[in-house]
Amino acid sequence: MNEIIFFNSALNADSKELTLDQEESRHLVKVLRMREGENAFVVNGRGLIAEVDVRKINKGSAILQIKKCKQEKKKHPLLHIAVAHLRHKDRLEWMIEKLTELGVHQITLLTTSRSLQHRVDEARCQKIMISALKQSKNLFLPLLSIYNDFDDFLMEQSSHEKLKLIASCENVDQNYILSSLNKERDTLLLIGPEGDFTPLEIQKATGKGFAPVSFGNQRLRTETAAIFASSVISAFYED
Image (cartoon, rainbow, N blue to C red; front, side, top):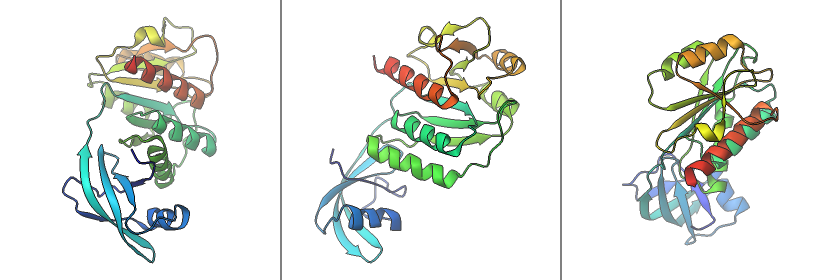
């Protein structure tokens, strides 16, 4: 694949021509200094990739001529990481970036008893994910969801046929994460805040079918735990 990749959510299999938005057009002209007639690729975040030629460059926009498209299917099993809100915005954004690079299917931000409820700049998170998508050459943009009620999230997930896991530092009956994985099932992993889930939250989760798992003897920061677990699970899926 050509290293030059752009993003446009409007791309579909029937598209013949695309106009990049202002930000992507500026990147094409000002940063990459591309010229009319040069070749690139465009992705839509839903598995479709198009080979294109730069047809026309206008002030503030670039028009692309689509040569051919290819639709890729999502690789199964899928990974859903549900993680408690982080205290620091920069760590949250770093985590979202890395989870996108690792190919996580869905990222959920949770309010728990020991986490603070934050206002999340979803538009900025979307930009970060798009940038990470292009950099890593992934074709699927993660779904980002936010739940301010832990019980509501557990209730919504209770009927899903996923492998449901909850990571905890509490002294509960748990297995190391690798011994709990299953290549035949999509995985949902809950990761708590600094200070961990409360015993009541763990009890509620296990009551909804979540199996407790550990990451070993180290005590990891929330964002580190999310990256570590995603790396381990992704490697397990690819093995």
